[in-house]
Amino acid sequence: MHLTLEKVVIRHEDWSLSCDATFTPGVHLITGRIGAGKSSLAEVMTGVAQPAEGRVRLDGIKKTMLSLQFPEYQITQRTLHAEATSWGIDPDLILAEARLTGLEQRDPLTLSRGEQKRLQLTCILASDHDLLVLDEPLSSLDCMEKERVCRRLGERQSRITILFTHEQWTFPRVDMIWEIRDHQLVCCGPVPEGIKTWQTAPPPVLMLLRAGVVPENLTPEDLKEAACRING
Image (cartoon, rainbow, N blue to C red):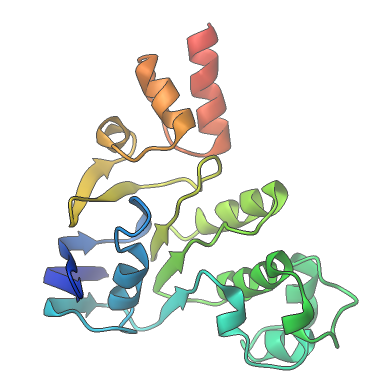
């Protein structure tokens, strides 16, 4: 199972992004500065948009899902019960996991964005997708919910998960780190080696690197363990 970007170029007016990469099963983290083109790349990867040049090749991938940054864009039904049911899964189980039990007849658009995001991600993660691309999935979530989502993402090792985020503190267990630099998608490498060359790493990771400590991975537990090595 592979997602391959063959000499892909994405253009918007006077801006462009070049990508030549292959994504295999596991969790891939892609970061970059605001305006670097992360959302545009997510859309091209999933076929929502077409590149100006090159080709996107899906080998062995039958089911693809793009999780949009703003959950209201993916709501299609008038009640939470109907929304969960539209995904083909048990609505009672979904609403319980999303901590929305008792709101079955509520209009999803009247929920807070954090509640909408909980519903959206719970439905997505309960479904079976070979390729899951998530654009800022952790925004609007509280710390407890971020950790729950990250645990679920870490369970998708046999399929391809691509995470675009500006998150600074909470990450799933990551297999490969990528970042957008100077209008190009660059592979930093597998974790933990790739952490050393990660230029857009968040402050907690940069602090560890400056202290000469490389965490084994990016989960909260890994970062805490690495911090303990500094203090020790």
